[in-house]
Length: 96
Image 1: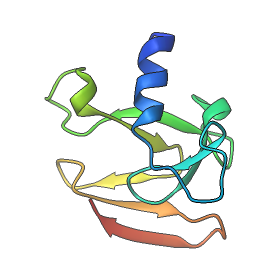
Image 2 (image 1 turned 180 degrees about the horizontal axis):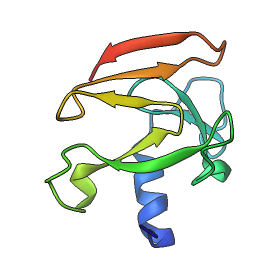
Image 3 (image 1 turned 90 degrees about the horizontal axis):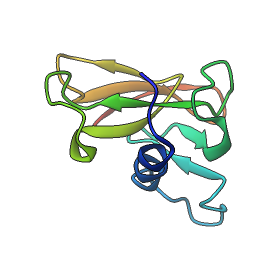
Image 4 (image 1 turned 180 degrees about the vertical axis):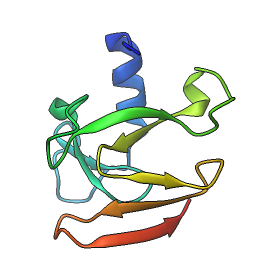
C-alpha cells in the first residue's frame, strides 16, 4: 500500500526516540530495532522500515499502525511479540 506522506510522518513519530541520537534521523521500532527516517520503504537497508498493522484486522487508523524495521518479524496472530536485529547484528526477541 502506498501511504500518504502525512501518514508516514505520523507513524514515524510513534517510533521510540533514542537518547543521544537525532530523532529526525534515527529511532527504534517497538521491538528495539534501529530505523532511519529517510529509509522508509527500503527493506534492503540495514535501517529500513515499513508501516505495519498491529492487528491485521484492525484497519488503517493511526492507532493500529506502527513503524517496523524491515528486519523485524512479528510472531503470533497479533503483534504481541517480535524478533528483530539489533544494531550489532544480533537477533533479539521481545514481547510488546
